[in-house]
Amino acid sequence: MPRPDARIDRLSASAYRIPTEGPESDGTLAWDATTMVLVEVSAAGQTGIGYTYGDASAADVSRRVLGPVVSGRDAMNIPSCWQAMRDAVRNVGRSGIAATAISAVDVALWDLKGKLLDVSIADLMGLSRPGIPAYASGGFTSQSRDELKEQVGGWAAEGYSMVKMKVGRDPGADADRVRAAREAIGAEVALFVDANAAYSRKQALALAESFAEQGVSAFEEPVSSDDVEGLRLLRDRVPAGIAIVAGEYAYDALDIRRLLDGGAVDLIQADATRCLGITGFLQAGTLAETHQIPLSSHCAPSLHATLCCAVAGAIHAEDFVDHARIESLFFEGAPRPDRGVLRPDRARPGLGLEFKRADAEAFAV
Image (tube, rainbow, N blue to C red; front, side, top):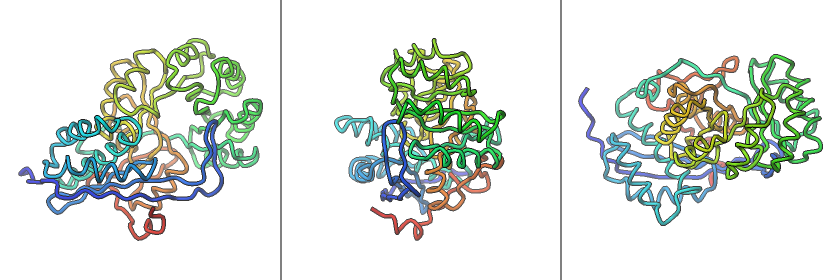
């Protein structure tokens, strides 16, 4: 196949604010809406799409800071574009908003490359497996005990083999909430908890004992990911059946490496909508493999379904309830788990997603 002559001629970005179905909270934050930023990059008559979750200001960074540095570049040469974007945000600050903007553009470039070659990203990268187990994720601290049981019990009935719930808002009630979730899902479904850095080290250590009694097998961000020493301490001291998990706030490979080099985690997370896109996610996979630590994705299931099937060390993907709803609303072709397993669509070029602009317009910021 001849190589397409594909100079980038347009980059646009738009933001959409989607209300949640009810009040939501975790251990440290409460919210009533989620913002998605969508980036579109065009070359040679094709348009690739990428997206991130965060703040609408990422759309401005994408247009104003990143657009000029990728414009005119070869869309087939993603590393060149990626490095140019990293250079462009040096004085803006690469972590946070700038990283999410780069992530969205990088994802759009991969989608565009697949479309230019008329091949799915799954086949462009190559797959380690045809499907990846997904864990259903939600269980917000804003839910009543009965609402929690109904949600996680429903996921178990749908065939998910793993579910995750939030803890940390009221540490005194967490043991009872975890017990209720276990009652709802039964003994065979794996139960994960996510504190979103709500606990002190000693709180987390004490609660890990009661969580272990309910068969909790993963404890995400018991303390802040900035507290590498605290995560390492907990990793060494929690009951043996509980894995310490972090990485969702890694904005580049250096953040991933800091957690891995510090021996802070039993399982590392990466989020392609934050960690500098698909390019950054693949780097995270390589780092995880070299440290012999398994990898999981954070949120954005329509994107990570493919990436977790490509990265050999990935063991599961997060099917976060808010993002699953938004992606099904906004994207034709958004994959959904079949008995708890996500599979990429290899029949469509690129990511296999088509933006439903008319449906999204009502939520435009």
